[in-house]
Image 1: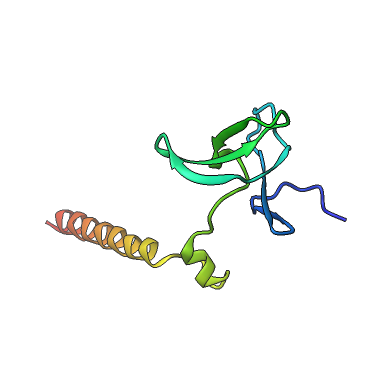
Image 2: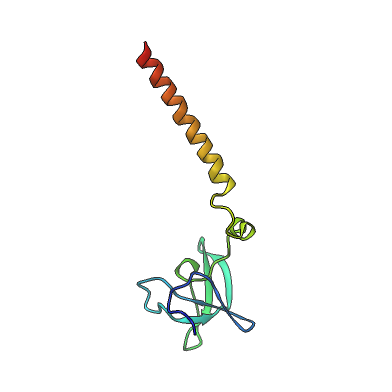
Length: 110
């Protein structure tokens, strides 16, 4: 039995990829559709599907549980809490704070 929790992972039913609309205010929230196509359109990722009347429709992928997994997360497989880029930015910030602290201490000592 499936849990009744929301999921952000795309569903696979047989060989067919499906997705569920997850946007809290969308009228089709909770409905599952077969993925027809995924592409960037109008400046954002969109997923295409056929509605109940057979019309081709599109919706922002961010409003669904369809998403491509971040390559870093895939390789890290949960073993790393921070990305290298984030840690590098943290080092820069800490150096800036240390420099400002040193400058403030020098002013106080004068």
